[in-house]
Image (cartoon, rainbow, N blue to C red; front, side, top):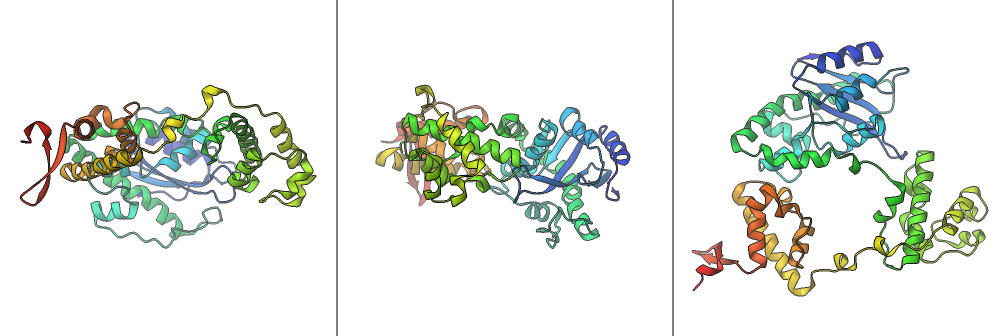
Length: 390
């Protein structure tokens, strides 16, 4: 495989992307920093097909990344291969306004092949290629320039190995008939809705005990205000205000700005500065949450004592079934959905649809509805239909 020098100019990038637009697939990885910013700072992009590989410097002065985003987002003929690509997809979405499509995630594929719940990249390379990766540059500061040869080699290795592993994984998926299992997961991973940070929805991520409409209305207004402040300043939202402080102000709102000095988590300057004034305006403009938007209390209740026992049985069934068919259990069902099923819910559960229903959901449903039971036969735990029990 040909390894190109670090690409820092627009012309060689455009030429590379033109060649890769004819490939069947490209392996993609990114290096980024997000500790001090709201949006991840993209520091390096690595890309490869089965013939060539390159690292691209998005921080290079004047470089035009449009050909790269067009290849990843607009070109539907080239499959984009990632490993645990959620954060990479988020970065592409932030820069290009769309997500890579079609997509293949080798971590999800490994789950379908029974190679672990969330196998790391180094373990994937060791399993498939027998190579041990040099982790020396793993925690480097990718934003510092210049990058040395070791850093670039380490980064490019993430896509050269992936480009070698992908065809082997694809062949095994075909042999096992499990390729179709991944379709829904890949569509979910590329759904732009997963990566759009809508300020008006940000309140739903914050833990708060109250279910009062006025409290939640204030929480929604404050969370949206904080999100916009963080986006405008490109700072982590926690640098603006911590979740617990936000929830406390929503539950116990100050009557005037000077009272902010008494709030835990805020400095005294909030009692008279501009950001404090903007927060107070957001608070004053809040309205009680509409009844249709209030959280469903039923969905927040636990399954109860008996339901908890049923959920434990479902988890045991999941463990048995995932071992029987050699697939990661989390690909079959989420623990939260098992608890919902035990509590009597049936709506909006992937395990009750498609291949998951065939492999696990049907038996899970039979178990909670009394048509399936555990039994011990010759010292081994087995499943038996209740109609067969004398």
